[in-house]
Length: 468
Image (tube, rainbow, N blue to C red):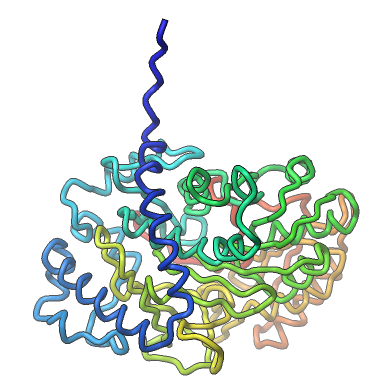
């Protein structure tokens, strides 16, 4: 009796179509990492013209905003003649922004609501992700196949190059343990499902939202040669590695999706004793990867035009932290993002090899706490907390007259003297200009992470209530 094979799932069918295109594109994507500035600009110019022409013709939103713009006359070195975009534009005008009239925000939201650990392709060819739900207004972003190849390929090309330099992958591909998003709604959780198969590596996901003891047990069982994860989780795992509860020997550790602060870098590097790579990946398509143990991230400007700007969207010179980053995704013609504003703080390196942007990532501009007449940078609080060895992890909420800090003891069952720590924090806030600061410190065994992404936002400002 013959047995009929079950048809592939929608994700499997999508992946079977995507992976050959991704594998075919990887040699060129890897070669682009060595491009000089002139070669990058030539590529950006050609892709920008195509993007602007397509957006003007097929997106009602961009047709209005780009009326009168000649795509052939726009120079990627100066986009100031083009209007900027915000998350509000994407949320409120979604149906007019996209270029496929079949795609609606209602369809995308319904698909995301049904998404679990695997992405659900939309119309058999698109994949949607959400961002910002835990830190402000939620954004929804949809990638067409070409944009997905650029996004995933840019994230993995340095890894693939290293695997090639090592003589190729082991049978079945190089296994990578990743402690990150459990839900495919977040790109970290979704993109890992595109690996395996024809690619020379595959991911072994461990949800960052699981209890720490369970994460440790899982990693001890996996013994994967590479470890990826959120910096906040990697730092907790570093403590367990030093204490002997975690017993793994990765060849390399890679941080992703959260800001890698100097203190986190030191803790992770010292505990595992192997090179640390830092990656930057935004749902909007901007991607960057550092060299091992390099604080600078090299951004994939062959996929996006990146503008580092101040509060008035004027360019900032190298060495000056940006107030925002304007991103033009050159490959996503389905949901054109043209000079889209990210609130990340990047500081470009004045010097460095190669033609791509090299910059440090300091977090988000909207992590700053603003009071009447006083602006407090997170460093004011961080400089106190990093000097407390009894504190393993923390989260700080702005209050009307100060802050509320939640801390996790470095050792299970240990005690953090909240009154003493509150006093030190109050002194630092007063020295920074906040009169009569009110500080509350609470200890917990663990911090609440976003239930879908598993990410942790360390500094949470007060926000005015936004509309739906």
